[in-house]
Length: 313
Image (cartoon, rainbow, N blue to C red; front, side):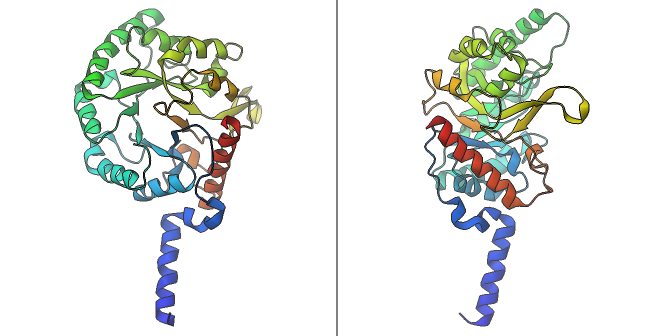
């Protein structure tokens, strides 16, 4: 190789590192040897600093079998851009033999006028799972609100059945519907979970039900169609009172062994999705320009993959 060719080669490789710093880690990120149950997805909000076209390969290199893609206002792109941006990502995932992507969206019954076209579009791309947007209580009459949403979701479930798509509603600590897992259970009463089911988040269930999270897990396990994986500890940051602080997988209070009791935990049809939400320089919030080096982000995620394998081997 002459000097001109050598310089060209270095320039091309440097460009690749800028677009996909996964490559710069070399052998430290050997192809996945993790033995945890499949399919194992990464919620890629933590990779929104990468060009979208680099995400499938990056996810594969870190040991995942699929992508959970944020498709919303603060995601990689919004719902109205699905037709133009999703096909290329799906083709690249297929090329790498990854599982079909999952989408995380703001789509819910408050957007019923858009729902059929949305379901038709993602179904046409082979997408079979997506997370729905959260719903809020409209009054102080909790049961009446849940009954109203139940009726609306039954109509939405008919559309999901028509297009062979499963909507997933995540339980999430806080005042929105789903802070208590009981709320989701009530809201989805009488609905086939293969049409609209639960994305079960044990971290959030533990925060809201510190002594009763096992009860709600068994309450809704027949409705679960995907699992979110993340961890936390209780802390008192800046003297503002006890609150949950996200930490790397396996370093906190979440009793992951409980998930092994699910009768379909090993089922290939139920995605297991890693959420990386502890401090990574803003990457955990989807920032496009995190304040720490890309390699540090990638190393942290890869450690979570190793821990996942140990927990669930």
